[in-house]
Image 1 (cartoon, rainbow, N blue to C red):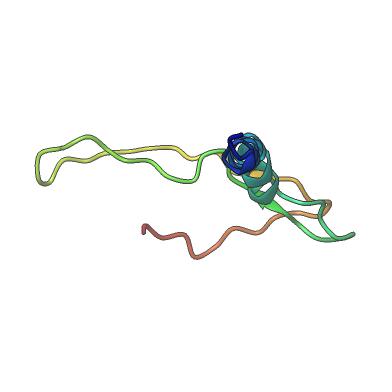
Image 2: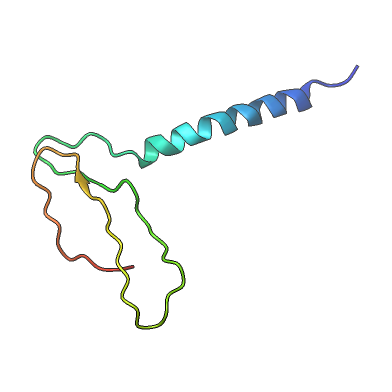
Length: 80
């Protein structure tokens, strides 16, 4: 009679694969802000430009949201 251990391992692996995206989304989602605190939220955190000619001027707008209860002060913005 064949062992059921490989089947159990497959079921566990499938369960982990099914739960992983939900766990990742929960970690990436901003939690509730503490009372009286701003909470910055970026729906999209990165942008990769296509190849451009050296010296060309390129622009990309990022959306920034405040999910907190007080104003969000944004200063010292720089490129990465």
